[in-house]
Image (tube, rainbow, N blue to C red; front, side, top):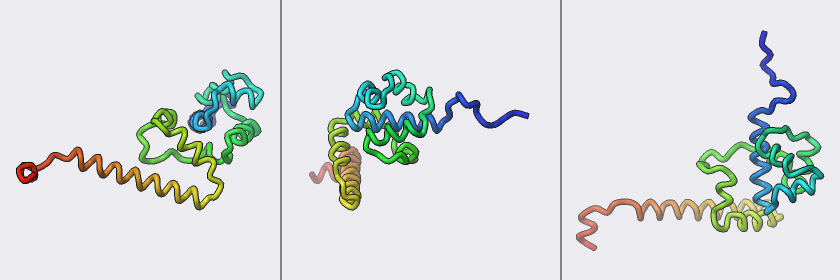
Length: 146
């Protein structure tokens, strides 16, 4: 009978997800792999292996990573955003994204964070509506009356 559990050295989809979140949060904090590695006392190659899911991250090491990145350990296990079509690192290449994340990370008050997030989501919806209006073809009547 086949054993459905992976061998101890094999990584899983969860390991890959944790690794991609480490990469995303590290970049959001403006840290290089080398800087994180130095803070953890490991090589940058080891950080690469964690981020790509090639190596599992032990509980103690994950706690140290979370402390260095200023996030709770649970943030490595949160579900992916449903509507996102881009992965985390691609989002960080958008002009101003890292600065927004850094500023948001400095807000200590939870209610203020929720308010800021709500404001940004509202601005995004308004931007999408404006883009849709601009992209919509104008009817011949509207063009004639303009």
